[in-house]
Image (cartoon, rainbow, N blue to C red):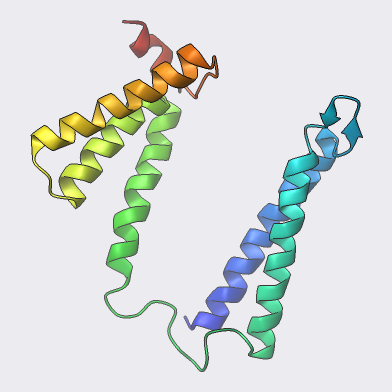
Length: 160
């Protein structure tokens, strides 16, 4: 796939997401009330910016004024591996968050990423991957009283 085609495809996908967020922002109420902005105000504002940016990208790709000149490939040879090294573990963290919650998923994600991608020793892995999620748990759940996603089994696991 050439880069200009990829620009168009990604812009259309992001524009669809932006339009969905705009619809939901309007559904929630995007006005201004006595207490300040309503729930949909900022999502609608952000979605308008995203859709506007996507329209600019599509126009540039169609008219040939994008930063990519000619028929350059979207992914250069050997360029997919570094991208997948970031995307696949992040996708795994999202899936784990739905199952065991944000904090436990963060511990597993940090440990695996630091060890497998970074190649650090186990001591470093444990000194980073355990305290950071625990600090965020204490900060958000206990101090600010902002509950984070617990997943299907996270609440039961953290209860022990």
